[in-house]
Amino acid sequence: MPHPLPLIPYPSDVVMLDGLFRNSRRFSLSLERSCDQSFSDSAVQYAKELLDRDACLASSKEAANLSIRVEPSLHDKEEAYTLEVLPQNVSIGAYGHQGLFYALQTLRQLQLAYPQSIPCCRIDDSPSLRWRAFMLDVARSFCPVGEIRRIIDIMASFKLNVLHLHLSDDQGWRVALDAYPELGDEKSGQYTKQELKELVEYASVRQIMIIPEIDMPGHVTALLAAYPALSCTGGPFSIPKGEGIFPDILCVGKEETLDFVKMVLKEIASLFPSPYIHLGGDEIPLERWATCPDCQKRKQALALSDEKSLLRWFYREMTHYANSLGKQVLLYNDYVDDTYDQSIITQIWNPLLDGSQSEHQAILSDYFHSYLDMDHTLLSLHRVYKLGEMLQPGNQARVMGAELMLWTEYISTREKRDLHLFPRLLAGSEIFWTRKDMHEYHRFLGTCSQYGKLFLPPHTSITPRHAWDPPLIRQFISRWKRKRRVKRNSKMAGISFA
Ligand SMILES: [Zn+2]
Image (cartoon, rainbow, N blue to C red):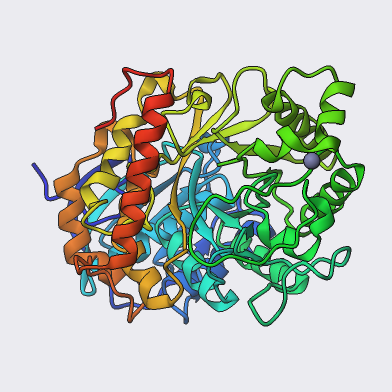
């Protein structure tokens, strides 16, 4: 059996060939006639950024050592590519800019792993999942734009293609909006609209789509602290520190709340061109609605039986509004069942809840395997890799993707972020991209420990931390209690999770 190539994520199909490609030469490109101007421009730009700052167009086809062509057989696979490394030259075939970008990322890893000579090979590659995501909670701990850019670079080098930004929560509101200037402030950390537009562009060049999340109607204490009239009780509220589920949520009985949310969605939608918007939907205590005259009045006017139905109505209104802005809605799976609008994509963070069984399209990010805020002793690299086992072929039609999550109640510095991200983010990259029958933990682990650091920017820490960490232990205990509570209440008894 040939020695596997040290690549993360591992490609679909690799054939080793005889010979070596000497890696010390400058790359000179030949672009076949099939490449239009925009494809050619991207090829040169990507080659300069990823392989060789001095990469240039060759004077003749014979002088080139990197030839690039549009590959018509990949016309229905924008992210697929072929990469052939031969002794004299490297050739790349792709149909879309994504495929071209990923081919060059693979070549970059080969270049880093084999600084002298790359073994000749032929790679045919395409992703297993179309949604390969990472969620960064910038609400609990603000993350500076420069840091997000660095994370985008790392995601791109491992072929992750969706950055989900959790922009609002009880502890913070991070987008400066024209309509509601009281929301958030510069001192505690906030992105201007210009910064976000530039960030979206930065990610887009790297084939990453940014999905904004505005959590509602729960996890809104920071919002209510600025606009207490949007709550059921009228407040006042102060912004909490640390984790928790807080009882005050948006009052959906008041017209002004609905107008407020719509205005926020409109501004957010204008900042993020992606066709998706995440409206949160996790951990919503409904007890305030049960005693609020406005919410009760709304419930009666709509002839709804209970507060859960009122929540369903609220999401239907917001989903229709988001659709009118050209956005498809994502919701965490706490309440989503088959009575919810079928266009909603449900993000399964807690597979013990009802929503995990609905017929909606789904993103998998269950907290047993994908919550990177957990310490390495609780969520090992191997456990993250095992999330791949849940991507069963039978589920494929429903499962459009998967996501690793980093909640940041206790993670506020770059150093801490790195300790939680690495090397586990690389496991996500592989199981989301690589075909399930090619998942092989020991091969991945070997590549990861030998080359992982080489593929990351300098000064990135990838040492798992096993140190005693009191806040994380508290966090674990609270998660464990929640899990027990959910298990007790769940009608889904009998589901087991490895
Ligand atoms: Zn109310």
